[in-house]
Image (cartoon, rainbow, N blue to C red; front, side):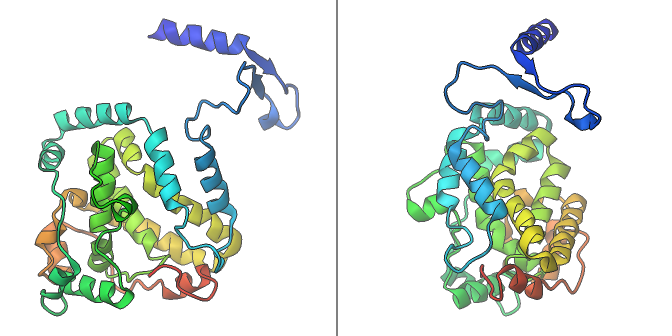
Length: 302
């Protein structure tokens, strides 16, 4: 393997043209242009090579939150691109490796539980419970428990691999994280959820697999951070607080992503956190003002 890498490095060096050297601006030195026979853009990054991903990243990082363009309008196109660009074979190799060393993760995937509860089912839970609060939220904004854009578009869609199952399951449990964390809903509150799940998956799984599982979340949420700093800096302190606080919760807690939240719907948020092994909870996290800044005077996500 070492010899192969040395050969590849030598071939790349032979095919590279030195552009800058001897500049007093030290970080400009060493730029090389790699010659190619390709007549179109080509990169060592599969993500950069895809025009749909490039469009998503440039648009979502730089645009404002205008009334003309819904927050997640381009998501179905992004999901199609992710399906076609991601390295499923490598991800499944990482999954198999993790399953061999992590019995709890292996058991979770063996069961491959998929939730089937409806909004009417949530209505039956007692006042103040996680389930009842979810019902009240969904009822107020006329929402569905299903968040996966592919299932919303095609109810017969089924996961084809572990990455599909991960994204399906995270969509099914997403709103419960809001209730369990008692952080409310809204665009800036979403960063608490991103923090919890990111911290949790990097705590309990290998880093390479964790990164692969978080690809969709990264492509959706991280551009909002750039957009906030460029256009809505007044929302930044709450955004960063939510992300870092959520990450701390995720790092301290049991493997929340493997839990059946459906089994704690009858409990209060405090009782449910104890049952799930959710640790590091704080009181009084309110992101409504920051969400209004991010939405240019309105809440742009329920």
